[in-house]
Length: 293
Image: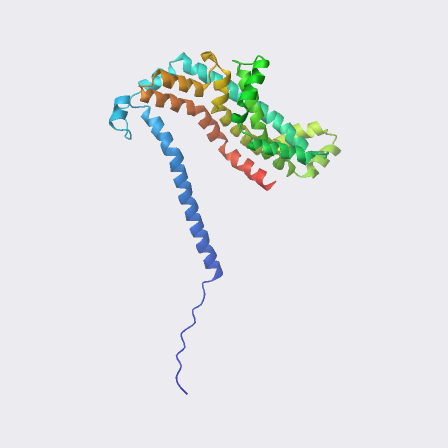
């Protein structure tokens, strides 16, 4: 009988080890993607903020460099300007009104669409969902004509109300699944205790929906804060300008002073960034609850 050499059998990698290897690779890739995305977002912001501490000749000499020396005049001059604080006040008024209206009316609509059974309920919800695909740029001319008929041109309310209306679809789309996921047993128990539908809404449902409410508030606030087209059409008086319009007029007035423009841009970003930073933990919870619902 001829000798036959048998190669030793190679045992396959254990399934548990394979899973750990895949998880390790996936986690590493996720971290690399997150760092890359953070770099894309943070580095331009840092460039704008730091460049505000330089002079325009320094920027012309070397666009990317640390200030040497650090110049505070750009920020000091803008903070001492009455125009900047007026633009800031107008932006805060419009953004807060638009956010408040979007959240209040959106929460009411989401409550009705999530907790009540009525005819064409899903049709109404689909209508709001389709509203996500309707950009404000398409409605600028009808909005302008409507606001002119209502004598709301050059009025802060003439910008805040339409911005709230355009924030309603995303508000309802996020709030409705979140409210729908809250157990009906809570509502039954509240009803047994004598609570009306409105009492359940204000005292139980809204507190439980706090993460989603914070999420839609941040989205509505940032969208209103960054809006440019609608204020540009509505406002002709510079006293009503919001910060995006104020920045555009400042850029036109100081077109040769790049450092001052960058300092103005940096200060314009601060309120929205602070609002987002303080609410970022709630945002994740609100979006997660909306997806699960």
